[in-house]
Amino acid sequence: MASKASARSPLATAVLWGFLAIWILAAAFPFVWTLWGSFKVELDFFSLRGWQNALTGRFTEAQTGSPFTGQAYEAAWLREEFWRNALNTLIVTGSVVVISLTFGTLGGYALARSGYRYAFWILIVALIFRAMPHITLVSGYLLPFFQWGIWGSIPTTVIVLVAINQPFTLWMLHSFFLNIPKDLDESAMVDGCTRFEAFRRVIVPVMWPGVITTGLFSFLLAYNDFAVTALLLREENLTMVPKIASFLGSTQVDGEIMLAVSSVVSATVPLFLLVMVFQRQIVSGLTAGAVKG
Image 1 (cartoon, rainbow, N blue to C red):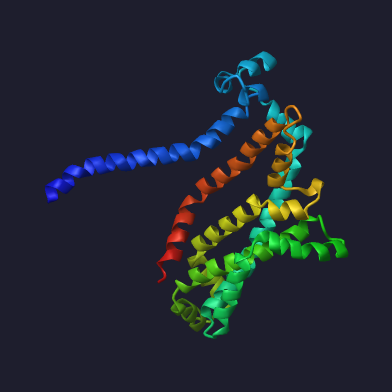
Image 2 (cartoon, rainbow, N blue to C red):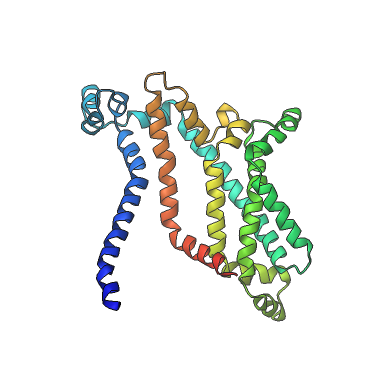
């Protein structure tokens, strides 16, 4: 029996690596192809004569003198001022992460250490709120925002995104705090720390991977959001994702589609870099959150 198992192991390993290679190819191909096409002109990347033109850059070389060109990036970032949308995205995502983590860590710690029954019901209500479609919540905000004259501003959008994201951060950080023994709190307070000092000096450093993991997911929610930002921001305050959608909505205008292609690459690259930088903290954070129970 053991010999049969060992005889099948090379085949199983080959099948596993084959599936892994197929998965990586399927996952990476769209981005690699978009990255390649972003340095071509529209006649090549969306050629009706054949996809080979996207590889050779036939029309790109005829128009620019080189098989590759950065015209799409120059037009998007300078002519259309996509850098303003990138700056708006940085402001919105940074604000959402800081506010969500601040209230999430304090609230998650309080609920995890609370022995009262109401803590459970607060989490249930937060979960129900998180499960509601974002468009439903946004539609409820629109009328008062118009009446108060605060529609279209970045702070208003940050408030809504925090409200949508806060239940998730509360649940996730609550689970991380449950994995930390209460003895650490008690030992710190025996040594003279107050409850808040024990939280800040002892508990937070221990669960730092969980904070980074939760912060990354909060960042992704705000970074990739379309419904909230498209409905609540004016044209001059748009973040990157709805701005890209506006490029896609003008495909009948010559060259506009290439602005969308270059903008998609510009918006995707920071996500790859972010995950690569924090990959160890993300894995350790997710592992720590999965140990309980």
